[in-house]
Amino acid sequence: MRELGIGDVLDGYRVESLLARGGMASIFKAVDEETGEIVALKVPHLHYEADVVFWEQFRREEELALRLDHPGLVRARPPRREKSRVYLVLEYVPGRSLSQVVREDGPLPPMQAVAIARETCDALAYLHAQGIVHRDVKPDNVLHGPDGHVKLLDLGIAHVGTARKLALSGLSASIGTPDYMAPEQLRGRPGDQRADVYALGTTLYELVTGRLPYPGADAEARLRAKRLGDPTPPSAHVPGLAPALEVVILRAIEPDPEHRYARAVDLLADLKEPPIVAPGGQPWRREPRRHRADPRVVGAVAAIVAAIALVVGAGWLSHLRGQEEAASRAAASVAP
Image 1 (cartoon, helix red, strand yellow):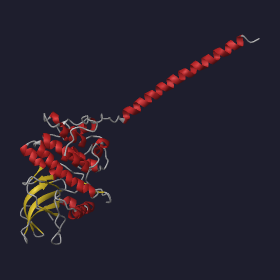
Image 2 (tube, rainbow, N blue to C red; image 1 turned 120 degrees about the vertical axis):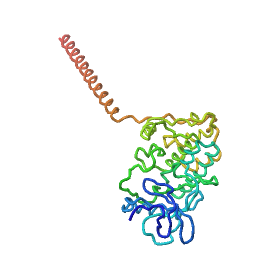
Image 3 (cartoon, rainbow, N blue to C red; image 1 turned 90 degrees about the vertical axis):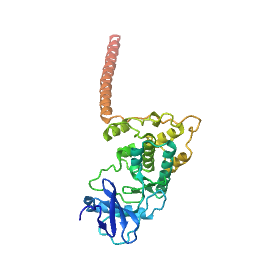
Image 4 (cartoon, helix red, strand yellow; image 1 turned 180 degrees about the horizontal axis):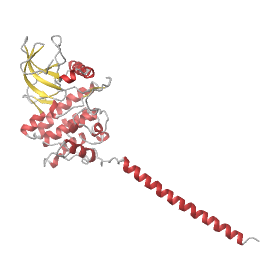
């Protein structure tokens, strides 16, 4: 068996072109030779096909995609024939990914960016209502069609609340795309609905500004900035940006999940009508970031404090003994 290529026929599907190539799979545009229907084939790379756990994950993705029904999600097609290898048959969606849109057209007008984020958030809210956390929301995984509507795709690493946890060999324990992962995920937590909200908020930030929320020449520098600092307000890149929109974006990408939107439906409500001010009549402001102290520094400081306390305690005991001895001598001198 070899990697699928242009012109190959896979179980009656003739491959016409490569649409995308990811870390685990490639997506091809293909034609069903029997019906003439244009479809997309998601085919895992060969070195993953031999992995039993990956096969189970892929099977689970197909099962999810077949039972989900939402206009904002790329739908799966049931296989027409017995499969000769592992792959998914998906509806073909013409258009570009949001990453292509920003790369080729630059930042979008805020109204268009919000409309895209609203449709994507509606699809996310639907997934969450089914007990599914997507875990890889990013511009590459949102298709922008010629009709202006968008579809969220790729449930490859989605987590279902009732599903057994799978450990894929050769993959990082922190699954996702670092620039769009929430800070708690980078610390090793699995992430819940709020992690999807964070990823969508980062996507909206990028659509509006053409940049990511944290500065850095490379991914490592941006991750370091994410761990230590706060996101750059989008208005720093887009002067005159509506304060209401900035409020929504900053709350969606709040580093502390306790102060972030708790659910996609909450973010969706504000995307439909962004609040001008928070309750109480004051513009929303994030809580000051509480930096986690380095355990080594904490340990060193604690040792110094303990040493000082020991020295001071010893001196105080010596002083008390001296006073007791002086009192005893004074009492002896006046005794009859």
